[in-house]
Length: 385
Image 1 (cartoon, rainbow, N blue to C red):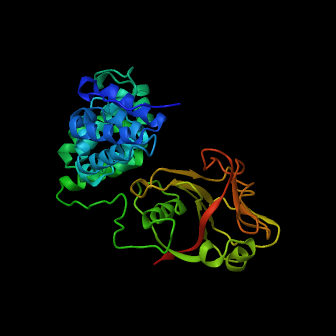
Image 2 (image 1 turned 135 degrees about the horizontal axis):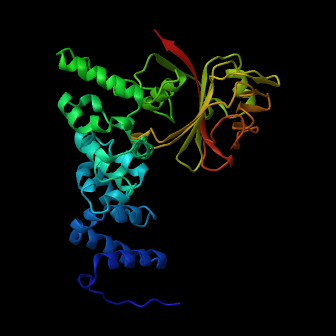
Image 3 (image 1 turned 30 degrees about the horizontal axis):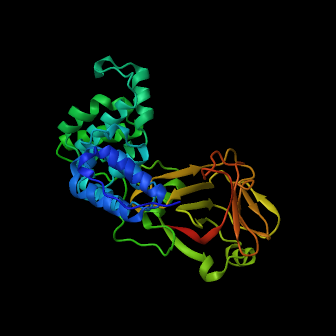
């Protein structure tokens, strides 16, 4: 029932023991000790924490009590990401975190360094792979490709010289998607002929904007690629205007308001911000919305979700119809409905939405069921000539 004061000499403890004391202090609610331990680690054990970054990162973000350590991690990621690559437990980093890391401006410019460390990480995840590349079988390349296929879109191979590509990437060409491999081959042939034509994987977006409280222009450009059924690595074929026609906080959250504004509107994107969450959910409807009880058949529709991290918008789920039938549902008592409740907003004030597996191939939330809506927007999509 009581906790008495005392003194402890932290210099006598291993750093890993201090981390354990920190975690125990959080469980006991010892705020002053938590603050002191964090300061001690940052001031005296910086090198150790850099070398054991994965442990520090996981520990610091388990609870908001460790804000000083969180700031330490965030600053290291932003200013000195190469130290994370060189940490002793680099290969233990999660795929999601490593993808986020290689997108930072301080590191993504050094494509060779990114490629080498991504390869190192991928090979370490598969300890049965041969130690010599010349010994790789077809199955070995497939194994490595499956491990690294989420990383490939974020590595700008086109910024390499022909020699860098041939020396460092070409030996692993079998893990590169075929279309990208062809584009790279063409690009470096042209480059060697002194007639290079720069290729852009994702358009620069700093000069553009979108009227949204939920998504950024980078989200919009990725959605535009999905409309054209492109891969994330493909060059955009068309540009689209996202014209805001409805915003819940401005126009209301009722089904009647949705149908008043959106009925008879073609090619719309619905964007939903889930309450008390970082989730963004959405769907594309190529055909018009209606108030009558009817089902729309359209294979070009799709659903999607993002975890709202602006620097890592590619953390998404994309879900397309299993077949052409029953992918859009019209109902005056509900707002937008995709499939058999694959994504639906309903209720007089949209207090709830739901996601259930049905007519689309992938559930766009980690768990099915109900959720509350913080904000939602509907955009009409128009191609820009």
